[in-house]
Amino acid sequence: MAERGNGSSGNVTLSRPTALGGGHGVLRARPEKWGPRAKLDGAAVACTHAGPNSVQFVPPAHAALVFFTMEPQWQIALNSDRRIVDIAPMGSLEIVPAQNEVFAGWTAQKHSLRLDIDPLRLQRLAGMEFDRETFELRPPKPGLFDEKAHTLACWMRHEIQNNELGAQENLDALATVFALHLLRNHSSLKDRPAQVFNGGLQARTWRRVNDFIQEHLSAPLSLERLASIANLSPTHFVRAFKRTTGQSPHQYVISSRLSYARGLIVNTDTPLSRIAELAGFSNHSHMTAVMQRTWGTTPTEFRRKR
Image (cartoon, rainbow, N blue to C red; front, top):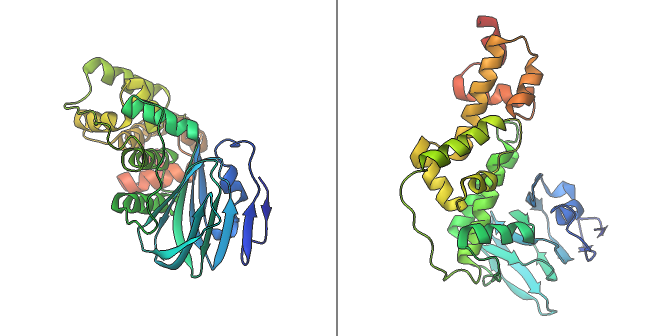
């Protein structure tokens, strides 16, 4: 997808896409100077800090925008030449379903977070969570404050801005929870009764999930993937997992990676960079930062004291 315009003043027009391009087509065309972004499996997240501007495009993915500051004159038009002009308060949410033409314009510095999610991924999540893959996203009225969307957006912004200390799975898990929030509150599934579950994971389910985690520490372990191993919806899985272990899935994965890495550091002469790779950290620096934050020591100090 090509971009026309300089991205700093005047209009930015994005050409109509023909394919999703791995879930990142829209963000590839987005000017990098607007802020940091992260690519996920079937999704992408971007923080935007841009001056007065306007954009017009047809997203290949479902797009959700959350404002971190108030926009006094937010212009929005969806599949129409009629532009609605209104105040967009901090925490307001905009949703643009995939393949819908949108125009957006703003007259002040815009601070926001945007999540793009592949329609196939959202459809898969709907099937896991609601046992129904057909639905319609329903964009809210302009200026609607969505407290949970704002909270999740703040957490995602923190993960992107502190990438060295974070983990890809954590950002992906937040994107999954955000997507489920859209389905539960801004789609035709809104009135569908939620399934109610109590208790933790069954013993055999726990063994299956834990074995999978320990055998795949070097690979991405997304919330959606772990929930599918347990044959549960993401929401039920998170609650049952925490009731079973006392930790969230992400916290448990990080703890498992740290323990595995410590064993290799203390008991082998494997280079630290290789240990970081085997344990599922992005690099040696990432492993060192997480270990320092969690245990107050570093891999080098562990190896020196062994």
